[in-house]
Image 1 (cartoon, one colour):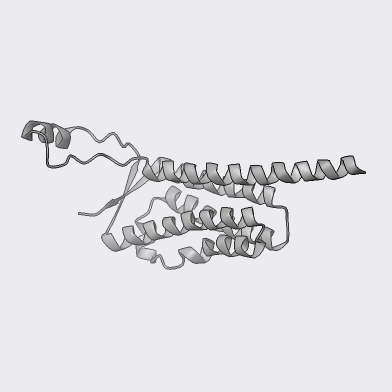
Image 2 (cartoon, rainbow, N blue to C red; image 1 turned 30 degrees about the vertical axis):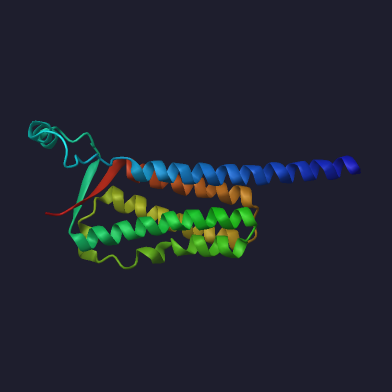
Amino acid sequence: MPKHSNQVRGTRRCSLGYVRFSAVAALLTAMVLGCRGKQDVAGGGGTADARAVASTAPDPDVRTAVVLPAEGRHMVLVEMRGMLTSVQEFISASARGDTAAMRAAAQASGVAAARDMSPAMEQRLPAEFVRLGMSTHAAWDSLATDVSRGGPTGPALGRLGTIMGNCAACHAQFRINPEH
């Protein structure tokens, strides 16, 4: 019997370690994806020739540009930052074993989070962008439902990884540019 107790205790330590590792990996992935595509902006230093070359060089960011007016761009970026906040809150709550907070974090990025987008603005978005976004919101709702049923944390974090796969795919394919 003592051997069984040690095995359970060892499994729990491993699971908690896995949760912490998954949390750190997810946050690092989000940070890397958030920084991808940023370009260095030349400061005040350098020669005029260097600045001229920098402004005429082709843009190395080959992702599809989604050009939106300032208000629409702001709305999309706020929605994305909201999802990143949900990821952070979900991971923190799962590390504490707080399923109510896990559910709340997931619900915050569900389909209801996309309700403020006007039909005119949505028509400006590429179909694949909308498909990825809505499937991501629906996945958050599904995750919230699963968590409220009391499932184990490990599979819930796996589902979060799948959701983040959608985020990574979207950020790899699209960039949001301001309309001039």
